[in-house]
Structure formats: C-alpha cells, structure tokens
Image (cartoon, rainbow, N blue to C red; front, side, top):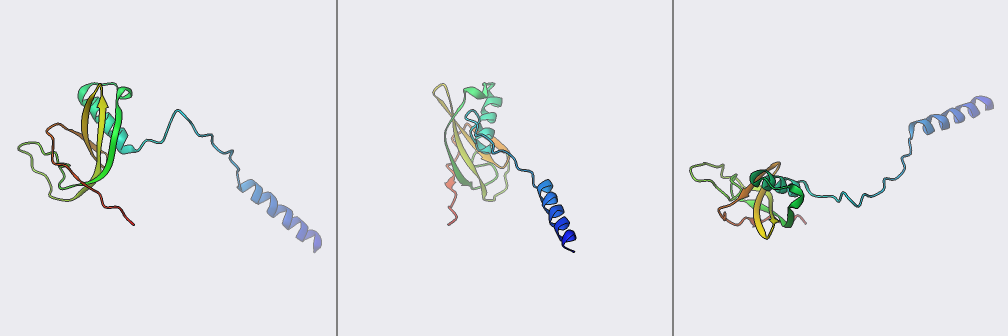
Length: 126
C-alpha cells in the first residue's frame, strides 16, 4: 500500500508540474507605452482627414466627457441625431501649432471643426 501511495504522490507531482507552465516575466518595452484606444482613434481621424503622418501628431489633452447627443456635440447641418447622452472622450491633437478638437465615442472618432458645443465632464464613479 505504501508503494501505491508513493507512486500516486509522484504521479500527482508530475501532473501538476506538466500542467503549470511558468513563463518568464515580460520585460516592459520603453518604445511602446500604453496609449488609450481613444487617443489612437483621435490621431487616426486627424491623420485620415488631413493626410498627415500619424507619428507627427501629438495628443495635448484628453478627458472623459458626456456628449448631449449622438453628434458628439458637433452636429453637421441638415443631419438628425439621437438625443441620448453619449459617453466618450474629447481629445485635443496638435500638429505644427494647430489644435484639432476630436470627439471619440466607442470606436468612432470625428474631428469637430465648427467649434461644437463643449461636452460636460463625465461624472467620476466613487
């Protein structure tokens, strides 16, 4: 019986060792900082609209906001928008001393050129 117990313990040790794969800790990369997705989307919107190299753009400010409708507080004339509070971000992107006001909600980003209505800050959850 003692031999069976010893074999069982040895088999259990081998099984648990085989199931747990230890990974070496990943080195932090200095060249790839964590950039929020909404900032990436904002820079991409400016780059696409004005044919600017995305690497030449700088995010100077970003804040979580609530837009009063689905136009992201930057309506286009003649368009209709859902009147619903839309959580998102207002991101200011700079290129050669020009500041672009970009509104982001989810995966949608638009450059607001007409000085749309200022969004209100998103309430902080406590």
